[in-house]
Length: 474
Ligand code: SF4
Ligand code: SF4
Image (tube, rainbow, N blue to C red; front, side, top):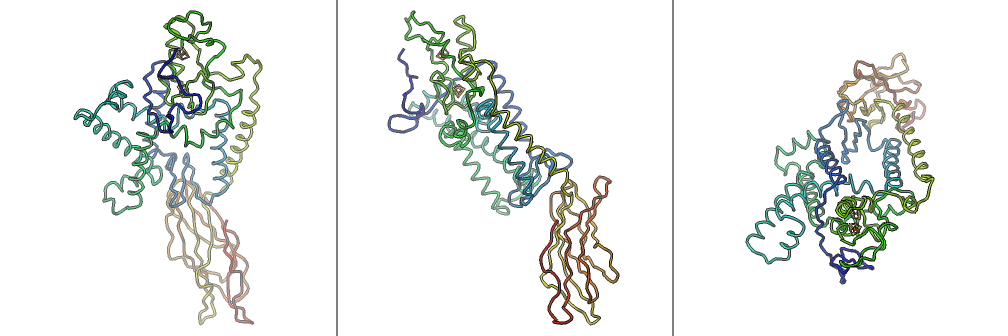
């Protein structure tokens, strides 16, 4: 059956003979998968918009403050130099993607990717609301520019812009914190030109990406889409067409000789957001959105055949192989558990207050009373999840060693504070000392120590400084 949906065998469904883009108008589809994906996308949109405002034990659920190298994930506070935690967190993220892809293919793309969720949740809804069905949208695009068309396109663009700004503001709130973004919004953007420009640039990007570029990103730009062929194997559960059952398909309207269940209605192609004909087998452009499953099941029900001509299955399952082994998934799971254990241990044994001692710019000063003064700067990083006032003392106790601390700050949660300390001691050999910082958090006394460091005094013989000038840290 010749059809306008027949796809060229040697080029993408969205590309014409000269390499230009063919705009897709995916038709609406109803069915259990569509309902499930709609519910999931509503939940994800609400979660995304609420994310910058959610807290765990007083700390943000997710904060990625790249400028200040301050991160909060599930309430855990860490900075850009917390290398072991970053290593384990990034490793867990990558392994989770690898595991889900090896087990369920591009399930992320079809069900949870922001691209899919926001295009379906906002932009396609705006298309339907303003321009009508997929067929009406196509007719409107092909019609001359009348006043009615200008109004529809203008209104659609305004709504696209509003949706893009909502998404961008929520995204920016994850980078700077929800309350901080709200404060920025109360004042002129000229007071915060950096975030304001980032917001404008991101809004323009989202507008073009979700409003215009759409499936092209999944097909030609998404790095995850390129990786899937490496991560999947014949045992991965993906959306597949049952060729054995479907073929031979109906050739034309009057064909009564076909033995397969596929009536060649092209409904599965009409609903596909990337223009794929799933009957040609698993393809890289398929984002596993399940629209073709619902479409074909509806057709099968109408013609009195059983559902599942297109369904979730694996290549080995389709070919009738028994005893499927998910070796790859098992290996990913083992490594993932090792990373999870590594992260747990790292968090379990890290100090809630990180203490780092750096020398002041002048190594030492000596007074008329021959008392030497050293200036140190104690950097205290608060990982407790609460704002805590800190106290500092030096250990071990040494007679005649005293210190002066002009400021004892309250260290904000996830932030770093600097405590200046002036150490005074007589001009004679002193042992290495450590700085001990303590604070009360949730009624519990927390103590953290720096690495040992040396005091610096003039060498009584040469007059040169005596002592180690290197910095020390925890
Ligand atoms: S929707 Fe089903 S019956 Fe129709 S063309 Fe696709 S696979 Fe064949
Ligand atoms: S082939 Fe089916 S599952 Fe894949 S993108 Fe198209 S409609 Fe979605």
